[in-house]
Length: 398
Length: 222
Image (cartoon, rainbow over all chains, first blue to last red; front, top):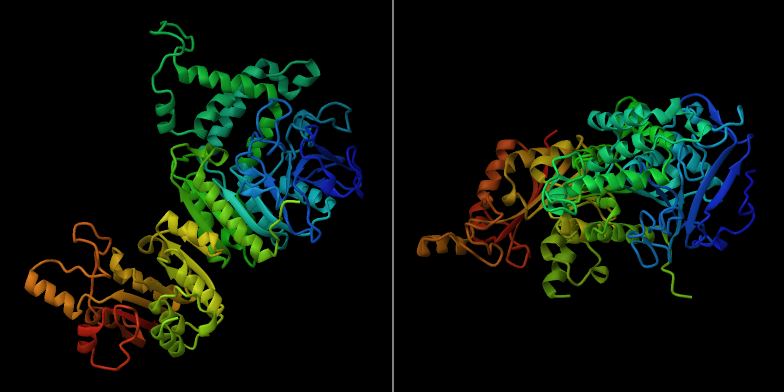
């Protein structure tokens, strides 16, 4: 049985305080290892998670949120490090599409992350020092396997819904492939069943940038009390461009100068876009671990769901009764609509129940995190219809 | 419920008491052509009214394709499984025999390649149901004859330069296409403006003159 520092296994999960910024932690002892795709196990395993809302008596109203590359478990509360709203606070909360008055919402930090779940910063029991690169390479399926351990621990047989965007959407697809009977509804957003060559290329640029920083020290930087902040910041700057669109960059920044009337003829951040990217880079390194960034990007690179099923994506969903709502965005060039359509085609071929909408927006890949009313309308409609089918009552205010 | 709806419902064996008040007559007729508990794909399903009728009244496992985002959102909110897509391009992605019926309701005239769409429908499904406005109706003929202008009616209310309906056909034209493709007509009905069947059997030329719409049930020749 897993033990927990912050709650006891027999405590009702409904007593969880969603404003608890420390987050919730569960420790799985060495007797409950996490088997990794790469071969080794991780034991013991720690999972840090947040919950919002209350689990109903039938335990049928749980929604698992899967976070993206640089997200974490703080989906719908003020982030303890940055003081900013949670990454999906637009979507999740009382009266929001993922309505915490109605659903019990769970979000855990993925394996390999850096916000409390076992990752490269965690202590390797074999050495007494941080894992660094000794942590086995993590796959999307490993992340999902760990989430399933958490869901078991919370006493939930079937999730009402699994939802997430980007890397989170990959986990959603993997959830249905791995545990079809445990997912009633699935909302993969702005994602793909496999990482494209171009995206692997971007991932590699980010990793090489981290590794080129002298402070990276072969991944052992924590032993030296330093961090490869410059390398990680550059990785973030490059990646951030891929989350936006040319239109939104042009509209927001154009060729405008930053706090100056004319160019300085130097390599200062003359342009607003340069200043903006530098800011994105420098704030990111305050909350994210460089090795974790390597692991997360690698997990996405290795994701190719069809490859696990004889190269036929439809076979990954064969027999699944899960109802899907797939969403993509017109200006997303990192996970373009063609990726979502490939998922939809496979779901159709497997006879699964699937809805699909491509949402018109100029906000690029990041649109899934932003205030995009069409996304909310689609998600709300899908969840409400699914909740009726699942028999989840509308909760009246107490 | 109007008398006409009751007639259509009784014709099709649908329980009148549980019908939504707003059910369209042509939808009721189509619902009557679809056997219970089958798999149905509704191409161009709009706001999902027909798909919902089929799900609730015939217990079908229904799926839809709809071009407009608004339509898809309406359907998703009804709990229907609908993907945003285009009959012309997306039917090709469905495997053979994945449905018992593929329905194209009031949409064939808006497709770019009606023949290819129809062929795909009868590849994906064992049967196809197609309804369309009849461009051979006498009122349209008279409008063209006497006014010399592209006809417009209640059903066909768009001017020629601003219409999604780029491939109008008459009932005779459609029968010709069906013959060319080589599929079997299991049933055909000519409907009045309200969508009620004319209710008599007659030669094609009579239907072609007096039917404002038509509904065909087609079956692949084995």
